[in-house]
Length: 278
Figure 1 (cartoon, rainbow, N blue to C red):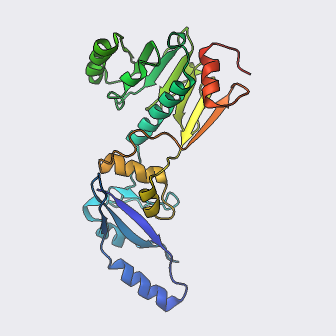
Figure 2: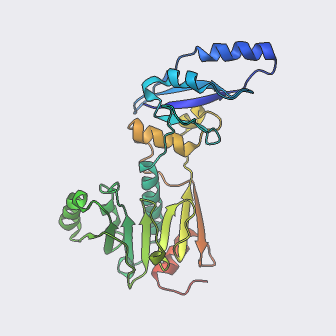
Figure 3: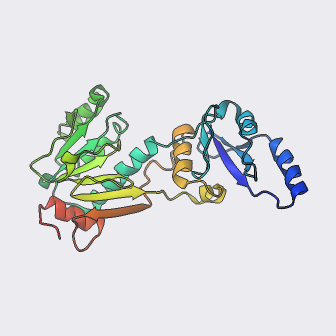
């Protein structure tokens, strides 16, 4: 469960606005039930001339005050139980899916490059073996190697391959494609092709993803000002929604020294072929 703050436009006339504020302040949280996931709640909020009455919002949110999805231009106050939900697992999944689909579409020779997954918190354990048909060498940078025991066994039994586990990133002789599932990049990746969330400065070629395409039913619900990624992340991580498990970023910006084609697939092929990119 989580709470979505839905901003209500305040009345312009003074007395109507006072009546509206009092009326909204008495409204309980509204439960929204979704097929295929746990329910979530909405709480109406008026951002009037004197700002938002946060004490009232906190009381109405109750036990879910620490799971708030709010417009990013609204700052939640300090010193109370209200806490903004920040997506993490869904971002890791989006980075992984975007990289996997791009490399799969480009279809470079599997023995021509290395794939490296940075996953220090072991969020991609169940998915990492999906990369083995695409590349003969898959490395994982993680602080939780024990979590990867089952994945290593699956790689050997199902693919006859070995996952290479490392505590830190090291460059390779072959062209490397780095999938930054944990958001951690370093200067030693400067010769690699790097898939990450938002803008990153490291990498010979940088694929920076952002945003997500919601399903039609979620688009219809989404209150004004709420970021789709925040909402989809809350549904996925707090309500066990599986509709975005295979989703990719809505936007993918390519930067660095890339091919003149400037498509993601062409950039991957240039990189894995070891060509001097234009």
